[in-house]
Amino acid sequence: MEGQKYENALEGLRDHSVVVGDTAQYKILAQYKPQDATTNPFLVLQAAEMPEYAQHIKEAVEYGKTQFHNFDRAHESHAEPQDAAKFDYNALNDQQKKQFHLFVYEKLAVSFGIEILKIVPGYVSTQLDPRYAYDAETMYMSAKRMAKHYEVAGIKRDRFMIKVPSTWEGISTAKKLEAEGIHVNMTLMFSFAQAVASANANATMISPYVARIQDWFVLNEKKEYSLDEHPGLLRVADIWRYFKFFELKTQILVANCRKADEVLRLTGCDRHTIGPAVLDDLANRKDVNIPKYCKLDEVKNHSYTKIEIPDEKTFRWMLA
Image (tube, rainbow, N blue to C red):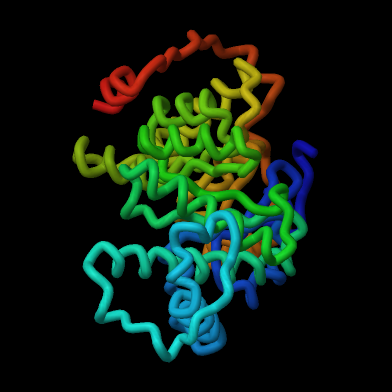
């Protein structure tokens, strides 16, 4: 409710938007009571290096050693395991080593996702290796293998999303995955063109990066910005209004807010993915009024022209 005082800012945000935890550290996740969760390769590695999560790396490497012989078919089915002691990493060529690293990462990332789903009632979003952001075939097969890992664990497709980089190749991959019933969350997103192209590809969700957008302007315009002028906040709010204006089904997941004040300027946006430090800040802001900034009934006060992105050439031109 507008004008209502909340026990803390996190509860106020929760009243306006879906709260999503942005961490792989599932043992601390429950305290924030998020609906959903997101991870990325950095967060997975950060958690895996902690003693309490170290078993995930051991299990992923063991899986890689016993199942790598099935790499080309792992998106369809898991094979009988081979003896891990007989696996010889040094016998692999350079291409096979890259494939092995990817194979182990996929298992590792999904293993964290499976644990997270024991805590959150909604979905978990698991990211592809961004080093393959311009390799559509590798991204597609990697996403299929990740989906197979979840399904083998008994997890239905409405409980997980695959995070795909918002390159043209990633957007093309997302279109294929969504057509097959594998839900996609488009990440590494900074522009209106990426947002619209992702919606055109029927992506379930997009995650525009608030702080990274501002970083570009600070670096290139040589100035600091107040919250009222914040380029990241203004762009994400504009994308949200555009999507609501044209009644696009793709949801907006606000990402990469480094400060609680940034989060609170996009209340009412569909979803917010937030790291533990900012979640703590929000939870520690007591007895506060949290206004709603993204309001559906105000969308009609704005006018938009439909953006057409018919092909790759147009997309790349719009990013230039």
